[in-house]
Amino acid sequence: MEHKQTVLILDFGSQFTQLIARRIRESKVYSEVHIHNFDLEKIKEMNPSGIILSGGPMGIYEEDSPQVNNEIFHLGIPVLGICYGLQLISSAFNGKVEPAEHREYGKAHIKINNESSLLNNVKNDSVVWMSHGDYLTKMPEGFGLDAATDNSPICAISNEDKKIYGIQFHPEVAHTEEGKKILNNFVFNVCGCKADWTPQNFINQAIEEIKNKVGGKKAICALSGGVDSSVAAVLMHKAIGEQLICVHVDTGMMRKNESRDIAKMFEENYNLHIIHIDAADRFLTKLAGIDDPEKKRKIIGNMFIEIFEEEALKFDGIKFLVQGTLYPDVIESVSVKGKSVTIKTHHNVGGLPEKMDMQLIEPFRELFKDEVRAIGYELGLPSDFIKRHPFPGPGLAVRILGDVKKEYLDLLREVDDIYINEIKSAGIYDEIWQAFAVLLPIKSVGVMGDARTYENVIALRAVTSTDAMTADWYRFNPDILEKISNKIIRGVKGVNRVVYDISSKPPSTIEWE
Ligand code: XMP
Image (cartoon, rainbow, N blue to C red; front, side, top):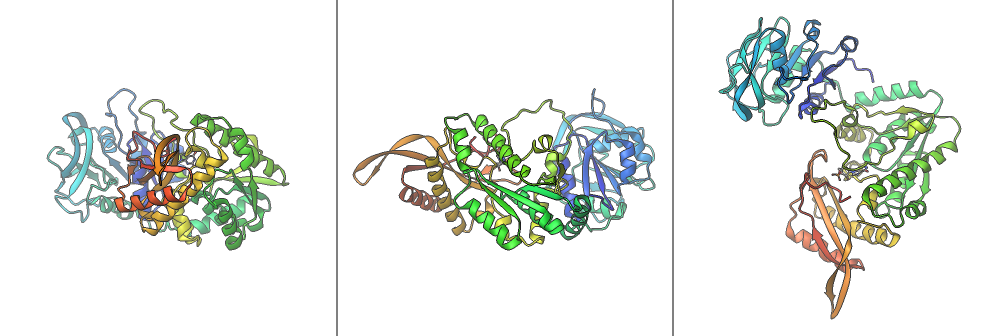
């Protein structure tokens, strides 16, 4: 998408880089993260309203530490350096950076002695969040000293003529009391941006661009019923109407009535052209006897692609494939910790375009999840639907530990339905990031009436989270848990014990497989 104004963030590997982008977008200004050595010509072409140099875990003099092309300081574009970014500015203008005796981590109080445009109206002595090992010991040339903290005598600097600013602390984290104001000062006062990155503007522009791209041709999209694919489908339909074909594959691993409800809602309320494929038997046949989690995930992913392809080939002239890819999947991050390992193979429709001769349309490539939700609201999708807990592509197959069988799926669907309905009626559904039940591959002894039972064990999981990268177990009121447990054991034949999972992520993951 073309943006009239963009704040460019160059990433030097800080764990907070994405947060900077989110904060700026919350102020309704578009911002984009790129790798620290993003090509200078591309920067010139983009002509951003401002550039932010992020923090980073290394010292600027360390071998292989990421560097900035110093020409960016001479483009006439305002620059804000945060932490490592401040040190880069310092080094570019002959200041000095040295290792501190102690790494400074946590809260500090900022003493402002000059209200630069960046620190305009920022409360003196307010709390700022520090996380650094090196610090400035000599001012860079041409810069004024604006603020200090006890451990960082050079904590904020500015060159107002060149519009270059540097701060040692992190304004993007919530612990920095005046962080939002500081970022807003930079974006609005220094860079002169306007607050016009709104869902409605996004939708209007996306529709225009999709129309131009697709022309009179057809596009296909996999509609799982998840928030991203649903919002993408509705947006696409607004842009190209009947030229959009949606395929919903019922894998048989869905929750109770889920497939039926999804198809009904989109057909009735949005007039989408949906092809509904009942593929439960195909999935179950392939999964028979497989108990390895990764194998299960791969089988489901591959089968999904196979079915989707079969359907796509039934139509002539499909030239575009719609995917609900989100921004965090796209950001090219700086790898400072070496290779990453695959914890779980996530199943989405990735991989399709290589095999099929179609161009990709990814309307949300630039968006964070909460922005997609905001677009969903703006497009009129029901709030219940937008707030739904995430559900993994492989569905209940990764919540039945071990072998997946139809009878287990049916049992788990009943349990899940009771659990989720109880959470809803207790009014706590929106407090929880994700809640679900897991069928364990063991049996335990119980007693019902006078008889001994030997039946299945269900584990309940509920977590709070903001991005699924980390999660904490949800603290239920015990009375609610008791009610849920009773209802499950009384209501679902084959279950005689319910346990609650109290592990956080890390070291556990959210799903059990
Ligand atoms: P984990 O279990 O890795 O899950 O902590 C993090 C989040 O991702 C969801 N999840 C998936 N989502 N396809 C998806 O679209 C998948 O294959 C998949 N596996 C896990 C999980 O439910 C949680 O929200």
